[in-house]
Image 1: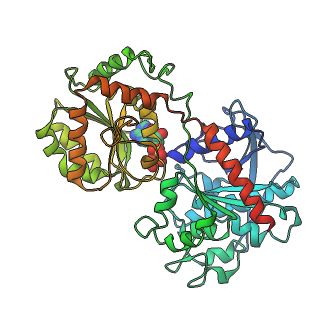
Image 2: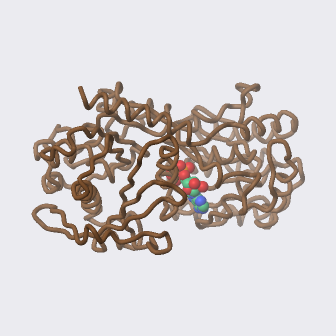
Image 3: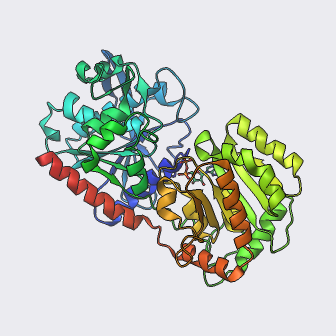
Length: 476
Ligand code: ADP
């Protein structure tokens, strides 16, 4: 997403519509006009033909405006919903009590804009809880309008840990039938309205961002209370792996990385490694591997396991570790503490830095991603493209992309462990360090990863099939 980003969803929202357009689908994107989006820099124009629009939430009339533009270099039409009272908050997501209401406004506004233009799509594709009420609004609040008679809906789950829980009252205020959120109702979860649950209940088809995560969320361990419902809807649930932006992440042509390289010309990779170590104030002989981390520092990402064993692994094997991340203050503090204990082996940059994330992918030998759960994950795919072997917990999209080199020497492109326990992570790190000694085998694994097709085209075709299925279900 060229306008704003906090994580993986932004990459999807920016790339999938473009890939769909290239396959002949006409896509219109609706999103909030956050205060950090510079409308004029991105060529947006105010939709004068609409003027001031309004919607109602709980009897209150809320005015908004619309800005219109295109995703860069594409025909994807973007509508930005402009309502400073809700979207000028300094950050994209907030912890305010009206957080869910902000996105009710976005969703109701999208319907009003479609009505004003007398235009209805074949499919509404809603992403995560922020758009989770779209299928419900379509089925109830706006069902009186014959314009939407032929419109089917799809809900995509990018992370089931975030559901948009709020007071049940908001369902009623949004124009939805109150009984849906009564105890045991299809929108209710622990006495609250769960926007994601409402979406899963009402959408014609449901998808998530990898085949393995689609299976996992049907179990109590990963389902966050929605596993029962997802098992009921198993026949309508698909897992489609995200693609990556192969132009922005191209080792042969990456302005953020000092030395270009490719599967057939790996010398640049070694130069990037030296440059990365020196950027972090470290050095290492050629035979000592460099581990890299780029991540939100959140409990999901499994660094609790790393913190339990890193001392032990450092005693047992020689390697370097470079880290870029920010988030949980406890984890930030622990990483800083480790750089003081092991100043010549570990270096950390706390913050968000796009250029550095590319240089870590390009200069590391192993990319560490021990996530407890990972709906899709992008960094393991970036790593493979940059000849860096990912070391991952076998879960979600990591399980669908990383093949363990020891378990399957012919197809292996990284290292993975099945049992999410600290000693197992430690043994896997040792295994990676030991494997690094066999350069021929290692480089063959690098090349396999670098040649893998992670482009969006493949995913876009799968989404087109999903849309067809949704239209079929809707007609029934
Ligand atoms: P999630 O969406 O759970 O954060 P993903 O792996 O799907 O995880 O996507 C994370 C995205 O954010 C990737 O593009 C990654 O490179 C980027 N990223 C995460 N932390 C940082 C950081 N500190 N600096 C730069 N980029 C980061």
